[in-house]
Image (cartoon, rainbow, N blue to C red):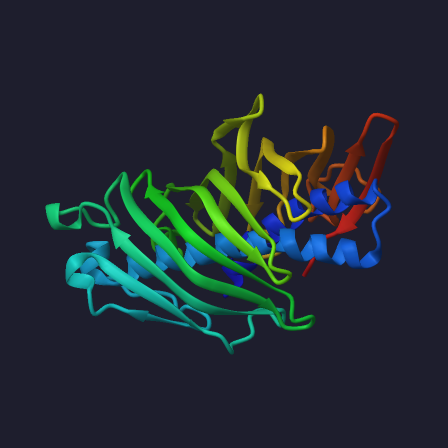
Length: 310
C-alpha cells in the first residue's frame, strides 16, 4: 500500500541521525550498515501500528461502523474473538513488502472498554497493540529485528483514519502512539528498549491530503520528543521533532516529507534533520529533492544532503 511508504520513510530518515552519529567514531562500512538496519527498524513500528488501526477500523463490531478495510500486506486478521474486542494480526513471513523486507509473528489488538460500549471510531478510544515475536527481516541482507511488548494507540479525535486516506471523510483524525520500553532484539542477540510518544493527524481538503507528525514527550531536558531509548551501540538517544513533520499528496503520494525538522541527540552531540530541501540543501516549496543533515559535535559541524528514498 502506498500509504505505508511515507510512514516508513519518516523513521528511516530519522535513522540517518544515528548513522551519522557513528561516523564521528570512524566506524566501518559494516558498522554503518548495522546502524542503518537498527534504526530503519523503527519504521516498522509505525507500519504495524497503521495495520493495527486499519484492522480495528475495518471489523464492524470493533470499529462501530460497517465499513470495509484496506487489505493488509502479507497479513491476515483473526476476528474470532471480535465479540470481546480482540483481534489478531498474523504476518505470513514470506510476503516481500516494497521489495525490501518481510514480516513474521503476531500482533494482538485489544480495544479497551469494549464490554462497556467503546468502539474504535469513538474519541479517546484506546487500542492495546501487543507485539508478539514480531520479526522484521531485510530480504537483501537477512538482517532482522524482533519486537516484543505493549503499545497503545489512542484515537484522540475519533473517526477512522483509513476513511480520510480513502477520501471518504475529511477529518481531522488524530492518533497518538505511546509505548514504554518496547523490547528490541537484534540479530546479534543485542537487547534494547525504546519508548514512543507521538501523534499523527490526518486531514483532507477535497483532493488534498496531509499528514502531520508531532512529538509529545519531554525527555532529558528536550521537549516535543517522539522516541527515546538506547541504540544498538548502547548509547542513550532522544529524537525531538522541533518543527512538525508534514507530508502531502502533491508530489510523492506521502512517500516523503515536504517540510519539518527533527533533532537527534546522542553521545552529547546534536544531529539536525531538515526535511523538504532541494539538491543544494535549501528549503523548497516545490517537490523536494530530499533532506539535509547537520551534525554538530564539540569540534566542528558537518552537513550533507540526502535524496529521499523512492
